[in-house]
Image (cartoon, rainbow, N blue to C red):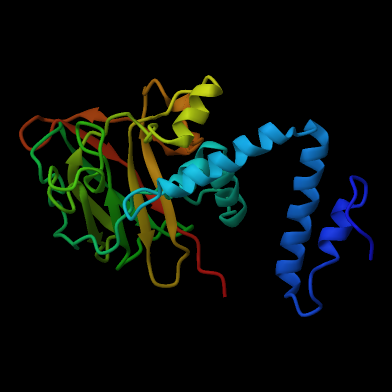
Length: 280
């Protein structure tokens, strides 16, 4: 055992871990220390830059609340969330691709009757969302629960505007029958910026990046015996598809929103979800 120097820093820090440290924690922390120290040496980080980094992380934590998670935004905007998602959701060809969960999901969204309208504030252009939940062989899946949520016409989720939007506005859950079909009415989503009044927004501005996300509807699909799918469908033609601030877009998730008859809805979006069997 030696004292820390510029040359020995990784070995010295990792050498302080106790013998009873779990193997997985040892693997993760050893790699983190190694990469972090290599990064500092590579850029020759100055003390002033180190202080900026500490201040940035401090302010990121301070702005977090029950309705806002700035660290998730940081992870999202650095592409970390999508990389973790990709590693943890490898699936066979044909299965629905996943994307970021995002910070605005709310547990306990009410289960509604098939075809119900989840837009409670009366804003926005009504869209009929419909399709099927299938297995890899194309068979319908019964009792799949489809949890959905989106922003409103103004680009805000209900949790961002408590007292302005009704609770569970543009949220709901729907359960498939034997035919695997789902249908509900919401609004045609709109593009919106992620919250950019905090440290992450300042980081994006400094990097010459915008904070906008392309229009999308969130879906979380679960069914007994199948792997959960967390994903979005994105509106084709949106100007931010190729520059999504959180890197969440995948080609297979881009959907055409087609004009409808205008009586019950102005648009319709059709999409089938294909689930993989749960791993034993």
